[in-house]
Image 1: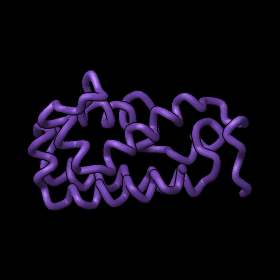
Image 2: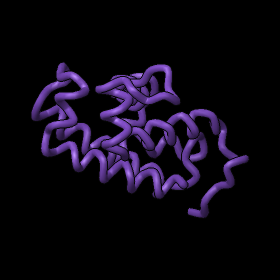
Image 3: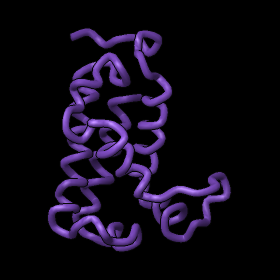
Amino acid sequence: MEKLELSELKFPAMRDELISYLMGLSSAEYQNNAWVAREDPDLAYDEFNYVVHFLYDDTDLATDANSWVGLIFRAESEALAISEVVRSLDVIFEKYGTALSDAEYLTKPEWAYVIESSKNALLELS
């Protein structure tokens, strides 16, 4: 499948929102500054919960990313990259549950997989 142009997407603003979440998920420094210390001067407020709601509740990206090709994804490869991010989060949630604080999630050894898969997805969507 050929990559669609950004102008051909139905919901480009949602794509931008997803990219902003991936930027946060791909940076341990950002996560500590924004989610834990709340010291990011360029940001009023952010937390890991926003990412979770976007992927799992507000959209069905966590269960059917392929259905978003043409809506926010330009190609199936982008949907696959997001599916990998979701898998990395699922590993954390299955092992530790969904009630930890942002700071607690960041200390888990599996969190490195979240960061790495998010970096890869960000590259794919860029």
